[in-house]
Length: 510
Ligand SMILES: *[C@@H]1O[C@H](CO)[C@@H](O)[C@H](O)[C@H]1NC(C)=O
Ligand SMILES: *[C@@H]1O[C@H](CO)[C@@H](O)[C@H](O)[C@H]1NC(C)=O
Ligand SMILES: *[C@@H]1O[C@H](CO)[C@@H](O)[C@H](O)[C@H]1NC(C)=O
Image 1 (cartoon, rainbow, N blue to C red):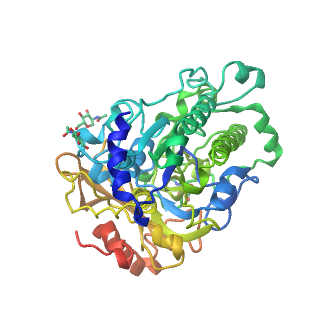
Image 2 (image 1 turned 180 degrees about the vertical axis):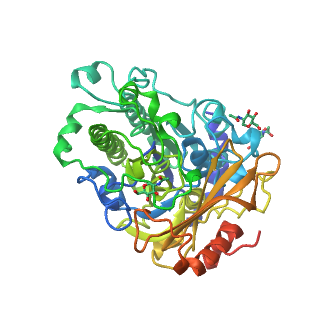
Image 3 (image 1 turned 90 degrees about the horizontal axis):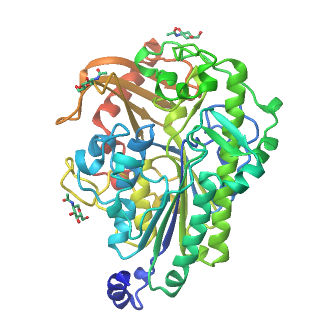
């Protein structure tokens, strides 16, 4: 009933005005899913060794979406990346660099994507993993939702000791997996919001956050048959880039993978130029692909529900994975780095009437771009660009609406995508810039509160990878005499920051 208070004036204002034809939003997220999906294969995915990946549902969604082939997260770990995407601001503005702090405490009282739609009269319903759970979001940022937040009640398989496991049909029939429960909830909520959405009484923003393919890789056993073991290969670069500074490396054992007993049993060191035994690498890669296909199947079921409720014609559907994932490339595992494999992530946005035939863009885009894109695509006025210090500004963005790319995917666009990752207890910050041809990274000294600023005069490492000849980032060319002009140019672009790499039409001064 409460919602009527919002919708009645909206309806009155909107009669007969085309601009008021708002769209619903179905907002999918997946945890740790790198862009190794059918539709991404090719030169845009830097790791050429993989089996054929089975993601028919995401491929079908991509076929009626703007597919962002080169979209980059702002920090390659869960809460910082999600907080950045959901607020449309970068880590140096949210001040969230870890899995503990909450942006409203350390950054500002920012309007989020669901919060925006709630303020505008939508019913906003969230489930599963959208914000990082727990203190990092004060338990799913309650202010952003009109309805109580849903987590699957039965988490039997969530805290497993093993890094992966195929669950038998008998088992998951009795105790459905976490994401199966979320998928059921998503269908139920869509049924619930459908009548009001179809009559125009109240639009919806429904967010469905799947936990897979995050570790432990748990999936229904039938997915194993999609990936026969003999089809799985080792990465061809199980070594750190030649000339990589130590600060670029993360000890994946201490950071994440060492939590599992099957991994502990092989005594991995997590050190530079070590990796896991071949059998373990193959097993993990296979299980990861199974978990990706399993997640894809759940998205397919929710999409089917959307279609059968006849909501698809007026509902924007977005999908993203919160960052990339290293599956043994460079001998590295998980995320927590500034490499291409960690910062490059999947994103697609389907807008009925705009992207029906499928639009693919190779332009550089960033995760902060999703907020302004959804706002514009849903039929609202564009979000203002954030001022230099936006800690006191509730509603603004540090991204760029991607709607123009839906109309012209090859138009001139950003000249760089920016990511960052802290090291050494937040006293060093790796800033990385992806341009069309290069990845360039500097690791300056960094001060946390109250400055949140790098000291470019003190560097702990510099990296330059030339993607035109080295898409796997195996050679750091920073010291190569042939690249000195490029290094100077890219260093200047990186230090000036993201505002100077905006599309020409969106050029704004700080
Ligand atoms: C944050 O902003 C919301 C409005 O979006 C407001 O209701 C709330 O009181 C604010 N919180 C603080 C701590 O200022
Ligand atoms: C890691 O291995 C590569 C390839 O063998 C080598 O060039 C590089 O120097 C090694 N890095 C370190 C830090 O040992
Ligand atoms: C990290 O820095 C904080 C704040 O300066 C300090 O309290 C903490 O002891 C440091 N932790 C480590 C492991 O050095």
